[in-house]
Image 1: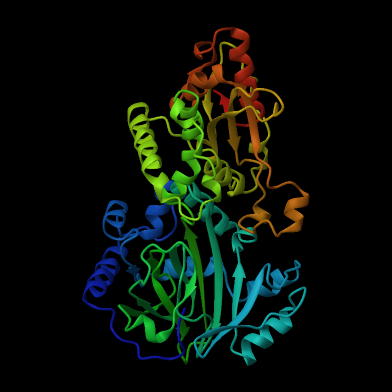
Image 2: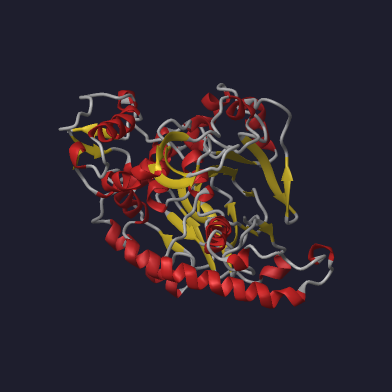
Length: 470
């Protein structure tokens, strides 16, 4: 992020106009987040900018700055995370590297000042005050319920994992050098002020994090101050840096990020193997041997013509059948995302109410937290594996390990990398689609042959808390 100091220039004509419009409209907009639906939550996050305008003009294209000057919203943002929260959190057993990084930008490079083992609040505050170090707190939604609520709804909205980090930087200091990220970024300014500079991407929609040198990035395209209640969005690949101005005791902001490894390229890598496998059952060209010694050759350019013709055949088949399914990306998302934020209403995650019977009317619960996939039977690996229907859900995921990665030993030991869900014969697919696509369904009208199958399907979904009887 930014370099220490720097002249605070104006935003630029386009950003100025945007900010003025935002300030005027914010005065008559609801101040706090709306949790009625994923759409309403996202709408309140970017308010007063409209959703349609955001995706038409900003998403993956250019930064958006919303300066609201709204005391109510500023107070709400401050409640999401404060510097004072660190003292209590350190008592819960935080570790350097895993939970907290202590760093500072020195001569255009990131200097990590982490100690070993558990984080001591007194040492952390000493590094903050005396070394002017930035505190980077990883995935605060594990501890702060309001951030859990926000990010869970955003994961429903985007259909992609949503992570976050809190950055607390003392005055006259900068935590990170100029860099770009591989995620879409939303910045919420919580405390104090932060001076930001954004630069034209050197890699549009970048797929990896990278530090850029000052002599390579040129002059900022945008420069501004974020204050509590303000929002900043920028696409992946946007080069940025930020510092806390002198005279401001500290700056606290939370970075909410999404859409990592969620591009068309990633989807093709996930879906094409299944398409090739299915097509090879019917097209002999895909079962024909590759030339002798092809794998031993340095240059296989002679084979590209053959591969090109096969790819064109696959494209034609896909266009005619439109049968392309993702499995690994779907499972990775549902397996690693946040569970529903239910507050004190924990009973909602245990089966309750009436048992579903043949004459019951049922409806889907937690629609945004469950997916249906068709895959080879995972329980009969040694036999000819027929296709089965799997219903995966995130209702039993653990918030405490959200976005913490496989290096979290506790997560591995407790099996949080497992998928949760149900397995059905392929003949159940139409009935499952029927439940997913209708508001209310009568069990006896499910698209299954026998009444016993209908009741069994409803009971299985009810046991997993995926449906309720009305």
